[in-house]
Amino acid sequence: MPKVSVDNALADGEQIARVWAENPTFTLGEITQESLQELLTELRTTRAETEELRTKLTARLNKIEELIEEVKLLVTRARSGFRATFGPDSTQYEQSGGTRTSERKRPGSGDDKKDE
Image 1 (cartoon, rainbow, N blue to C red):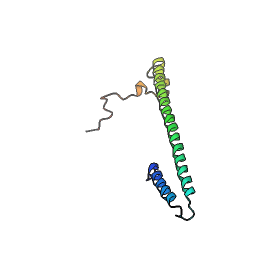
Image 2 (cartoon, one colour):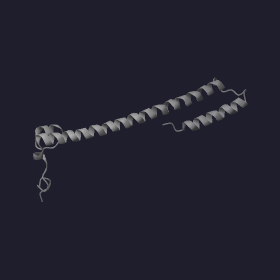
Image 3 (cartoon, rainbow, N blue to C red):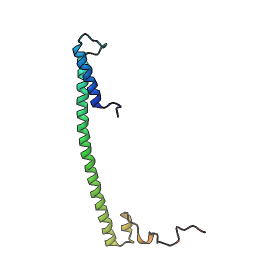
Image 4 (cartoon, one colour):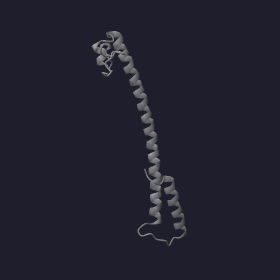
């Protein structure tokens, strides 16, 4: 990100343009009043294009989030369907991402306790 905001850069550039317009004999090497105005116009245009792209990007990111939620709901329903149809210890349920009943850790089974 730039260290100076677009608004600040434009304000500073426009201030220079006003002072320069009041002092037409001022020179700055190969830079002219017209080239300064073109630069300020290009900055305004580029900022506007960027804001438009940000707006579109936000809409697309929101669409992605909506689609993710739809997929997650479908996955949950499908896994539940495999479990209901084929059983909680079935290969199909495991293949769909579920954990088979026979592979679940039993609470208090001592598997996670360290020897004393």
